[in-house]
Structures are given as structure tokens and as C-alpha cells.
Amino acid sequence: MRYFILTSFLILIFLVACKQPESEPQTNPSEKIYKIAYNVLVDEENENFEIFSMDLDGSNKQNITNLSGVEWTYHAWGNKILYVSDTDTLKRNYQLFTMNADGSLKEKLSDMRLADSWHGTRKNGQEIVVKPYNEVESTFYILSNGGEILRRLQPNLKYFSDPSFSPDGEKVVFRGAHFASKKEEGFVDEIYIMDADGSNLQQLTHYPKSDTTAAWYAYKAGPPKWHPTENFISYASFQNGKYSLFGVTPNGQKQWKLTTTTQNEVFHDWSSDGKWLVTDLAKTEQSSYHIGLINWETKALTILTDSTYQYHQSPVFVEVLQ
Image (cartoon, rainbow, N blue to C red; front, side):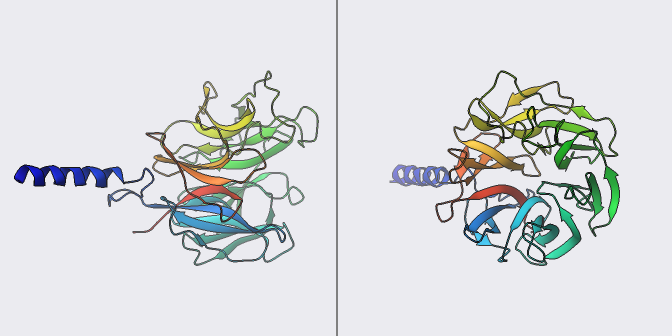
């Protein structure tokens, strides 16, 4: 009888352990707890994009902006989400805002018109690197978290976008090209790096000339993200017929493929502890987009979104205050 009870107890423990999903949020109080903020096209006819959030297991999905027009997140730090919005101005005239992870305390940081570009922060969110709209000024700005221009960075390139700080804040990595527009013959965007004062510009990636599978408008190098604990930069690139995520070292000496999924992966983010990778996924370039979470240690992939909406894109991690 005791053997039967012990055996049944062990089987029960085993079954409970097996039911724990790969993407369960951390339960150790010393570990960070995250949510994922991401962009959803809720009304295609009226071009209404909203920002949603959800837990790491895909539960508790909610619209945290609930505004007309376009709201799109490009970055988060700590419990704060940075996003652009055209709600207070003309259509597609993006201005910079911030809010808490639950959508509370929405605040405009700047009246400046921004380009449709990713951005990054350093010094615990005290400084933000952004790309203003070209007709405002063709440069990068480093802003205070109050919207004041602290520094202008002028890469010696005709095209540059999607800046991001290195984890120590000493470098800026971004997309750049020697032609001003993708419509110009010979345009190839690559990943570049420079010091945070704009000096020591260096090209890191080199798109394979033998690959002819990418359309003219496709990313040869998509918006870069710096892994927070490992010494490499990730980016998307259309190679061998699909978008995949690649890595490159900060000196450009090593370049490799990061992921092995069969879907297209473009916009992505790393958790601040480096343990999770989140990316949007699509079977074809123009099909529906879903959000996938990858355990960076095991490489296990979990799809977090469902068919309620067609387009879920550009996920970022935001920390939950305990």
C-alpha cells in the first residue's frame, strides 16, 4: 500500500512538472518578471494601430493605449514603454511618448516630429537616441527624458535609421547605406557602429553578393538589437528566400545565423537578463504576423498570439514592478 501511494505521488509530481510551459514567467523573487508589449492593427480600414501587452505565457492580453490613429512601440526600459503616436497631430506625424507597462501615466516627451524609426536608451532611461523626421533635421538626436536635445550625431552616410545604444551606453549601432533611398539602384542597408559622440564609424555587416532572393524593398539588415549579456548585435536580414535573425560581433569579425525557424523573423527584442528572445513571425512576407517567444538557452519556441487580429508586430520586453 505504501509503495502504491509513493508511486502515485511521484507520478503526480512528474505530470505536474511536465505541464509547466516553456514560457512560464519566472517565479524566483530574485529574477525579473516581464511582460511583452507589441503593436496590433485593430482597424485596417482606419489604419488604427494600438499597443497591447501580455504575460510571457501569452495570457492577460490587453490594449494599453486605446487611442485613435497610430500608436507604435519601438523600445522599453524598466517599467516604461516608449512609443510614437500621431493622435495629437497630423496623420503619420509621429511624436514621442512614454507610459507605464499597464498603460497608465501616458506622457508626451517631445513635440518634435520623428521618423518611422526604432530608438534606444541609456543611463537607465535618462537619455534616448532617436531619428527625427528628415525635414526636421537629417541626424540622430540624443535627448534627455524631458525631450531636450543633448547631442547631435551625424554619420557620414546618405541614409541612417534605427539607432540603439550598446549596453554600456558607449556605442550606437544602427542601419545605414551609401544611397539615400531604397528606390535607388545599389541601395543596400548594412549595420554600422560608432562611438556615442559620433566618431569612429565602422560598417559591421556585408550582405552576401551571391544572394539575389531579396526584393528591392527588403531589409538586407533590419533594425539592430544589442544582446544585453552576450557580446553580439542581432538584426534581421532577407537571405535564402526568407527573413532570419543574424548576429554580428561589435568588431564585425564574426557574422552568423541565430535562428532556425521556418518563418520570417524581423522585429525582435531581448529581455534585459538575456534569457528570452521575442520576435514577430510570418509564414510569408505579407501574411499574418504572430509573436513568438524563444527560450535562449533551450531554443524552444512558443507562439503567444492567436487569430483575433491579423497583424501582431514589433514586440519589446517591459519589466513588471514587484
